[in-house]
Length: 117
Length: 116
Image (tube, rainbow over all chains, first blue to last red; front, side, top):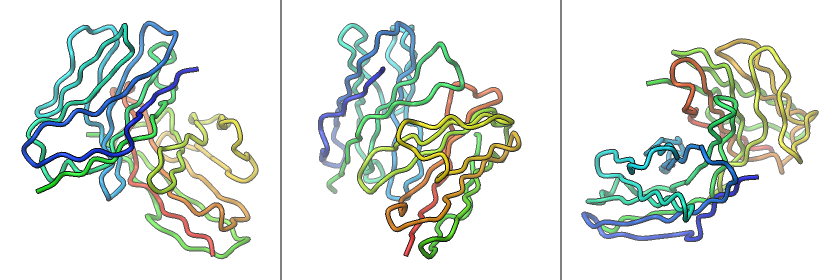
């Protein structure tokens, strides 16, 4: 079974600074998807970024980028130019590639990010 | 983008009663829907996976008779909490996949259930 580990329960960043959220995972599969989700106080889950394991290039979405290290099974999220609206709980998640749309997400415990003005 | 709605957004009920939560995909056909439970400051816990027209697959430890899931159409899944007790109080979230965005789960806004 796959596991996702987020070992830092909380982090804080100064507005306009950069912060990196860590995530490691364990799997025996060679193809899979990795995700970062944001859950603000409204509790609506928002997809931040997605990485396909077969792609060597790290995914980026505006101020959000990942450092995907497949051999190390590491998938960290970097938030640049942090904004007050980035304050939220962030979840790292894994999904198998082979079982397609029926495949469930395996979530990490999450990390609460606060942004200091 | 794909939109998933949930109704109601919050519900308060008395212990012993049943509560139904609806999850709808508004602009796509959801072949698969997922139901999660989330406690404050914790991660999402998958309760069950449902495919349209077939029985839901429950995760280990989730009581099938307690949490009834029906995925009767490609746009609607319901979660019924039967004989609710205070320990069932929680935040319930649904998600859906399907259509051209089959690689992504789209999440509903969640339902806060409080059992008195």
